[in-house]
Length: 391
Ligand SMILES: *Cc1c(COP(=O)(O)O)cnc(C)c1O
Image (cartoon, rainbow, N blue to C red):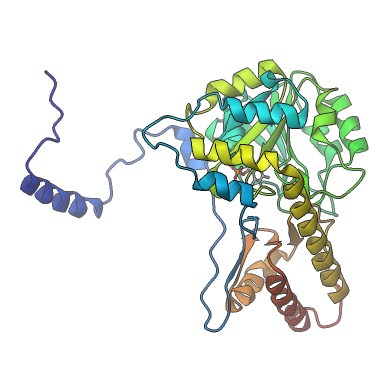
């Protein structure tokens, strides 16, 4: 019988542990030999940093677009109920799918459940992209787009945003070739904030070949208050090559539980299902998502409150002289360019964590005290770096 080499006594174990620890500090020889050649071009995902500790100041993490409140009471009650850790979760997530069927008014074969929008985006890239294909996406946008594209060896066409930080849809159309399989759109766009208008979206879709799958990433749709923005569910009725990506991480405040879903035609949904990890969403997470949907009016009310806080914050920044793009999610974007790190450092000193991306800084909406403190930082920053002119 095959005997794995690991069996040994406790004492031998300890000796082995010490040997393993010692070995860890020697760099691997030929460490790339077994990796796919494409791996060197895959960027690491950089998560938002935690806030620095500053004596006397309550720290605030405004770097990951998380909900700053705990989930609604029904979700907390659901999480307090025991779920057997010995059992696999419902692989089909039937109860959650049924809840979404009622909520979205779409058939159940239109819905795939995954461990957050991240897993669903990863699955979509996996079932559409390979070497020799192209993917087009706006940039700056969600950091995962280049990552999932690179991992699947596709040629990437990041398309710069317009001067007002919106998707440049005509340029995205221009970039589509017969090799294009996937277009990723994000509305509202993370990290800049604007939503796609329904008119520009429909004009865009009319020009996209049906052989190209279009992702509409709606991770923040609940915060959108622009009346003329595209609504994915309505758009889905007219376009077979469209897939919506949504999540419980943002407006529902369940980022730690890892639940998201896609809405698409049954054929697209089935393909995504092949690339999803079986049992990837725990039962506790499924149950919590169901509880949150049961009280979705409360969730939406809290999303509107954040939208109001966002509008007030953006307005206050503009009053200080900042050029803030339209903000439709739970964050605001400052296109600080070279000054991004200087600005981040000023926030760190005040125990405020923000997201420093290459072209600017994204500030998530947090509690009132956090936003008030942030407005003092932005005011002082302006006085120091742009004493006279608008930015
Ligand atoms: C947060 C986010 C997601 C999904 O995040 P999950 O936590 O994996 O659900 C998807 N797209 C964008 C643009 C996001 O910001």
